[in-house]
Length: 312
Image (cartoon, rainbow, N blue to C red):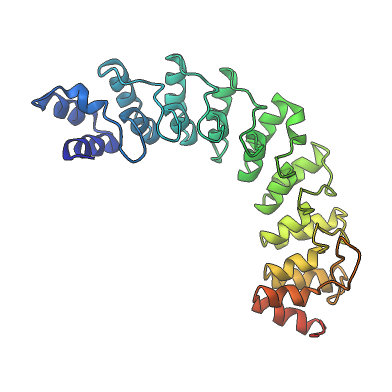
């Protein structure tokens, strides 16, 4: 990025349209050359920059006065609409759509502007605007994640409720590695969304992803003790095993979740010496203490020993 481009981009980042226009008109060469120059590293245009920072007046000026493409793509194939949607700038989203930008345009890895909007909590108005303008709620990215999955990850109950009302089948979507919205909400500690998925969407806590992990195991991985207690009170299967034959206690040991280990043993009655059940059915398997030693998890080791785990 040369010095002229740096100065222009700083003015846009500050949202100073008057100084931006004064600077462009002061150049001794064609200002259109500079205003349309892309960022070398990212491929961003000035339109991407203005949309990202939420300056509608600059977006309009770039479009109408400087003829910058409202649908331009950077090296990640991201458009200004992706930028505005992911940064909660609903006014710019509306403007770009009025200019004819494709509401379902895909960036790299097949992310739509709607998916990007769902990565930010409190962005419901942007989501509603996109959906009302034709955004497809059932599209999934290359990993199989759709907008509902993303709203569950963020824990935005209003957004998840709105999307569910748009298409009730979204709650049953599964990513390419077998993860349901329940897995996503559990891993990220989203209690309100979890309650919604169970009570309103009718999902089951017994689901397992392609690795055999259950929502309870995901809550353990995330270290969410409150969520673990809630899920166990909802009759989750404490004896379920993943593809490595591990129970939730083994997962807690591997992840160094000492407070969860204590809860599972003292409150739920799990045996601190329980061993994995290998898929082959042969051998005694490994104990929770073995998994803690394997990952050098000192808190888990101390907790298990204090709870009566036998150090073989």
